[in-house]
Image 1: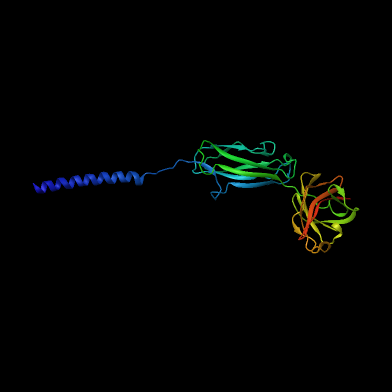
Image 2: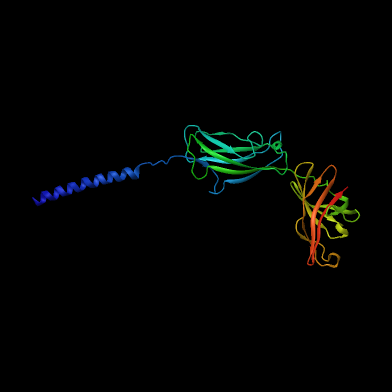
Length: 281
């Protein structure tokens, strides 16, 4: 009787053990495939911001800016991905050209989104547009984390470096009135960086110490000037070290070849006043 009860308990234990093993095998042995999604396929999680400086066209087309788009699995069929663009100033077909759909080919998980800048769509060499690129779904749902890319677009342009150099006649104005007679000065280039020229003038106020200023081109014909804060003459008219800074707005034009600087000289005792100087060839 005891022996039969023992056999019965052992049989029940084996049945329970087999069921438990079977359930465990269902979980462990089963292939679990997560749902696929599409995302910006850059390495870093925060790598979703870039700047695209449109190069000069070659054979009528500029080299594009490329953003990789990836799907987290491989399929045996083609899959379509939808892309949208939003900008307060840039228009698809005017400032840039980009597709609204992409196709991830069967057997592949990556496709390149090409944003091609339209060089002639930037009439100003200083214009800059912000473009938001969004994955909006398609055959594969979008990832919640990396569905947007923020792209700054501008054109590449090198300002001519020989336009504003040589001997100029300078006229200094204080309070709108000519202060003294016009006199000759020498203007030269220090460095160039795209649409920005870093310049200097020697002879301002009769001094041999160069005064540095910059020219920012707006288009091919005109732009603005800036006088950065700088230590100028070490002993200006016996008043000690002079510091010069921007004051007012300066401009330049190619035709006629002229520019102006707005500035103020100060020393420890005070200011010499706010001047506008005009330079003419």
